[in-house]
Amino acid sequence: MFVNAIEKALQFTRPLHSIMRTYGGKQIIPGSGTLFFVNEQACAVTCKHVIEILIDAENKNNHYRQFVAERNQLPKDGKFKKALQGLELKYHYNESTIIQMKNSFVDCVDGFESFTCDVHPLYDLGIIRFNGYNQIRYKGVATFLKDSSTIKQGKMLCRVGYPFPEFSNFKYNEPADDIEWSRDGHSNSPVFPIEGMVTRFLGDQHGIAGIELSTPGLRGQSGGPLFDDRGIVYGMQFSTKHLHLGFDM
Image 1 (tube, one colour):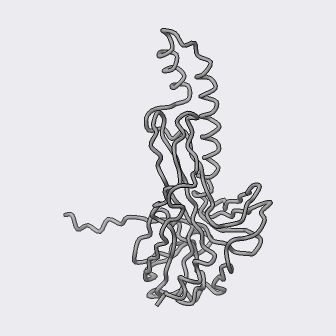
Image 2 (cartoon, helix red, strand yellow; image 1 turned 90 degrees about the vertical axis):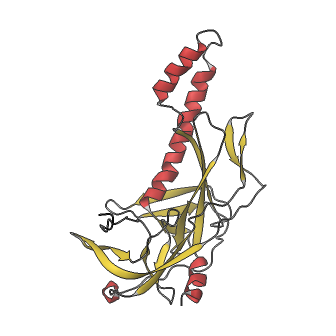
């Protein structure tokens, strides 16, 4: 039913790969998100919470660099351990604190100097614009439904994204105490489509703000397109809520 539509959507849908590590750890934790392009000028739509991760990554990295600079200034004497504990308290670091995060836009554009973001003030929605790129690496753009009043309960829709971060092209550089991307390992993650029936509509004072489907989305699919069997985009995956059905009584 959605075979051709999925192939169409994958032409302009791309994964965002993330790697991170916690304080004092060497193990790298992979993560993923999704975005899709809406024009040929390298503008993509994704969730606001995905964009916040991109912005937060740079803040975390700068914070850790400042910590390392101060740590390197501590005298290596009998008071070092206590001084380090004080520094950890100052920077609010513990074993579960994420201290480094790096992101990679996979097959979006061929080289870029920077990206700019705009987020919606109310909804979990944002736009990423790539600047200073050589050429785009996606094909086609999203075509949106013109009349949202045609969306009815019982309509079957599909969403697609990258919920499984199975890429492995990263490593921990112990001499530099840094995480980094590598030419070794797998650079791709599998795409995963999920279909569902329109069940309810989520509204606010401005009208319909969301479409509920009969099946849950997965983490990592956030920012991916929601489309019909023609490949027409109806919206974007942004949230999954677990409903209490009362069967545990």
